[in-house]
Amino acid sequence: MKSKKIVSKTIYYIIIAAIVIVFIYPFWWMVTNSLNSINEIFSKPSLLPKSWMWHNYIEIFQVQPFARHYLNTLAVAILGTAGNVFVSALSGYAFARLRFPGRSGLFILLLTALMMPIEVTIVPMYFMMNNIGANDTLVPLILIPVFCSQGAFSAFMLRQHFITVPKELEEAARLDGLRPAGIFFRIMLPISVPVLSSAAILAFLSVWNMYLEPLVFVSSLDKFTLPLSLSNFNDTYGLPQWNLQLAATTLSVIPVMIFYLIFQNKISDAMVNSGMK
Image (cartoon, rainbow, N blue to C red; front, side):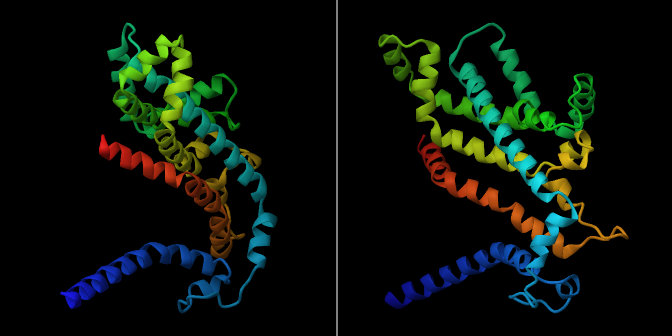
C-alpha cells in the first residue's frame, strides 16, 4: 500500500510540475530575452540571458515617453476599476434588493449590454465622445470599463451575490434605524469584500489590457497607454525591436502581478463562499 501511495504521489507531482512549467516558461522566456540582443533572441534557446543587456531597460525610456505611458495606464486602470466596482455595487444592490418601476426591463438591458462586444458600440461611442470634446483624452478609457460590457458584467456578478445575502440582515439594520444608504455602505459592502475584490481584479485586468479603445480614442503620443506603447517599439524600417518590446512587456506585467497578489486571498474566499452557497 505504501509503495502504491508513493508511486501515485510521484505521478501527481510530476503532472503538477509539468503544468507549472507550461505556465511559467513563457514568462521566464520573456524576462530572459528582454536582456538579450535581437540576434540572440532568435538564436539557440537558453534558460539564461547570453549578454545581460540591462541597457534594454534604459533604452525603452529613451525611444519614447514610456514612463508617461506607464502613468497613463496606471491612472486609467485605477480610476476605471474604482468606478467599475462602485457603480456596479450600486446597480447590483438596486437590482437585487430595491423595488422600482421598470426594474425587470432595465435588468434585461443590462444583460444586453453584457452580451454586446465593444466592437459594436465603439463607433457610436467615438462620435459621442467627439461631441463632448473627450477624444484624444483619457476620459473615454476611464468611462468605458464603468458603463460598457465590463461594467455590466460586474453589476451582474454583484447582483447575484446580493441576492444570496439573508434579508434578515437588512431587517435588523432597519430596526436599528439605518436607511437604505446606510444599509448599503455599512452592511452590504463590508460583507461583500471578497466579491468586490473579484470584480476589481477582473476589471483591472480588462482595463490594463485594453488595446482597441486607446487605438480609437487616443492619437497623441503622450496620451498612449501601455498596449499602444508596446506596439510602438520599431526601428527606422518599421520592424519590431523585439528586445525592447520584451523589456517593456516585462515591466508592464509588474502592476498586474502586484494587484493580484494583494487581492488573491479575497478572490479565493469569494470562490469558496460561492461554492458553499
